[in-house]
Amino acid sequence: MESADRKDIAACLNGDKDSYANLVRRYEKQITKLMWRFSRDPGVCEELVQEVFVEAYLSLKGYRGRAPFLHWLRRIGSRVGYRFWKEQARTRSSVPLADFDAIETEDADTVDPSVAAEVLHSLLARLPRPDRLVLTLMYFEQCGTREIAERMGWSRAVVKTRAFRARRKLKTIAERENLLEKLGWIH
Image (cartoon, rainbow, N blue to C red; front, side, top):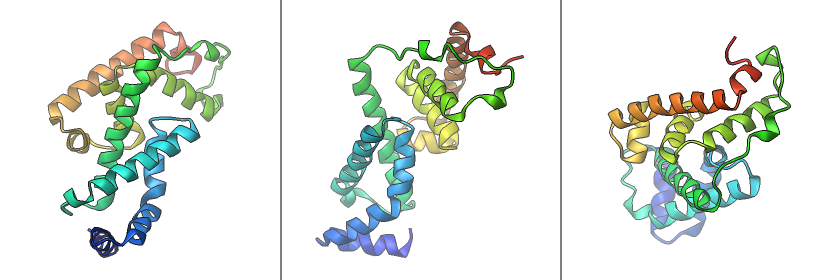
């Protein structure tokens, strides 16, 4: 653990609120990037980031310092995001992909990256939450199976199985929506 983190955590646990503000400033960018994976709405993302830091503050006594503080925050963030998806699933059934019917391209390099990101997030939203989480952490956050297992309290075998099945489900959904050819994912 970084000595600056260690100092700020100790001071915070002794009642110094400014020390926690230092931790928030130090890691806000990385946690915002993670939470953007769970919601592409800037307002919702900001709320999720705040929720991560509030939860971390309330759990700070339980931080053991065996891993870097950022790893601990990311673990909390993954769980906050997962809960967000769970709550979101109760209020809506599926994300429409009709808005992407206008995508027609011969060359995958000509697809606007922001449009491709929206398509991908819409496709991911159709997956069950555990599958969506595994692919999000694996491909957007570049987490290995071991790190995903640690963050979520799953075994590596569960992570590998979910990833395999999730990729297959994602491909099936994209095929059903005729998005593979439109985006140039297959030739």
